[in-house]
Amino acid sequence: MDKQNRRQFIRTGIRWILFGGMALVAGDLIFRKGEPLFGKNRKSGPTVWQLDPAKCIQCGRCATNCVKTPSAVKCTHAYSMCGYCNLCSGYFKPETKTLDTGAEKQLCPVSAIKRTFVEDPFYEYTIDEALCIGCGKCVKGCGAFGNGSLQLQVRHHLCDNCNDCSIARNCPSGAFSRVQLTDPYLLKGFGKKNL
Image 1: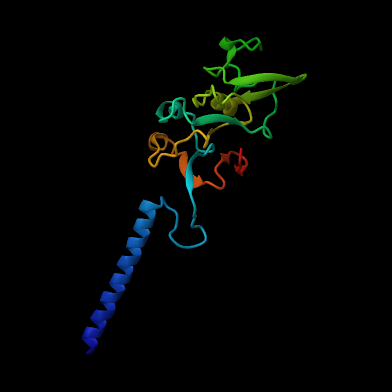
Image 2 (image 1 turned 180 degrees about the horizontal axis):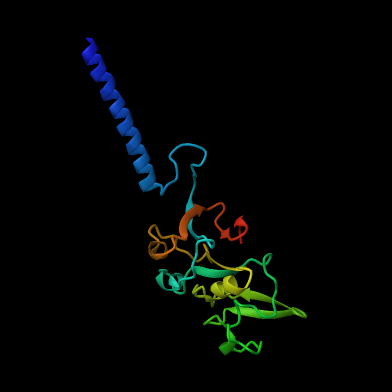
């Protein structure tokens, strides 16, 4: 083999190696949504859909775009963050002047949040998941004037784990992603947690 053919052979080999590497990276980005094909950040095992509350803008699409009725997205309460407020901005409508539990005073359109007296001036707020439609109104109120202890999460015992989640496809903030089944919940301020 003369020098010219050897150089051509080496150049062609380098081009094929570069082309193959670019194809692997492109395939990795397309089919694994940015997870690296090799290395320590590679995730393995089954995944599920989850909502990242740090990215969520409470647009209300979780209630209307889920294939389940009512939605598999529910409000959850991070009790360790809660101030057990008398005037909860996730429970009461903003213009409320009297703090009674009448439905017309509640922010939740389906009365899924229950208020229980603990001791003066503290109240505990619990979510009735069977009633919750995942609209995010309480989460928006809690985040705007409270401490953000109310958060939306996909409840996996209700979710069909669709391959192409219609909520994820229509989420304007890109808050939906696949997370590991072994650690399926993302809570603002706590990272991943099981509920």
